[in-house]
Amino acid sequence: MSMTTMLLLLVSFALTTTGVHAFVPPATSTVATPSSPITVQPRARTDLARTARSSVVMMPASEPAVPYKAPGTDYHRYVGIYQRLYYDRVLLCGQFIDDRVANQIMSILWYLHNEDKNKPIYMYFNVPGALLRPALSVFDTMQAMSNEIETINIGLTTGMGAFLCAAGTKGRRFSLPNSRFLMQKTGFEEQVYGQASDIVLEVDSTMRENQRFLAELSRLTGRKPEQIKKDFGRDFYLSAEESVEYGMVDQVITPGRKDALSVMEGEVGFGKFVSGSDQRYQPQFAPQAWS
Image (cartoon, rainbow, N blue to C red):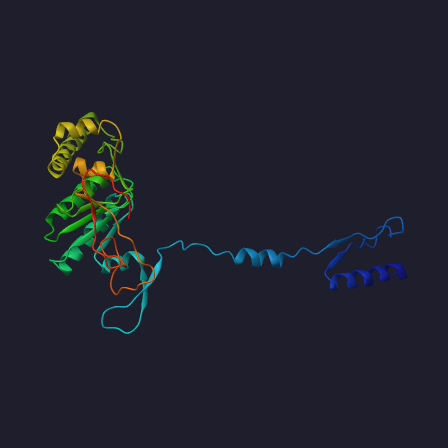
């Protein structure tokens, strides 16, 4: 090994230990000369990039957990946020109601009913829609309950979800000021396959269920089935005040002013406020600003 090659190796080792890399030509290549200087490249700081990526805080992909202290215990444990609402007999309906979601809703309703047959059950609706048959099953379950069922539209309730929101106990069906109802035709969400006779049977069954749906909605709202059928010819939007006039809900909730500095023992919800003031309701058909 020549003296020049050894010198280059020593220089390369010194630069590497200080955080940079030196290009060392192979032994068979031409040795660098003053006219062709050594190329020095900084070392990439991959450790900093990796640290920056790992420090990003992401929202939880699963159901959020909140602390809960069970009665008779002196410690808290973490439970899912929806499970925590069940302890207060609150059911938040925020998913498209298909067979799976309908089974969950019905099982929760029956559990709350068997736990206490006198306490009311609270159902909050912000539903993007529902299938006809599963929604009718949930409706039958709600009607079979001896408990009073309070329903509140807290966002946009669509299709059969609006029908379920209207199925609460008369006098306990509410809507927030900025909520809306979207009434739509339903029953033919999925294509029907098979022989012509099978298709006729399926269509006939769906039409009968639609007639039952219109009859029940007519009973809940006081509107004639012919008018409801005409209204459902297109997407039919109802504001909070219009839903009261149409008969979907009984009153529009106007929350009172909350006092963030005071602390109240117990629950805080749409009907219980930190300030301790009584719940006020908006007069029918008359818009009123939040106080």
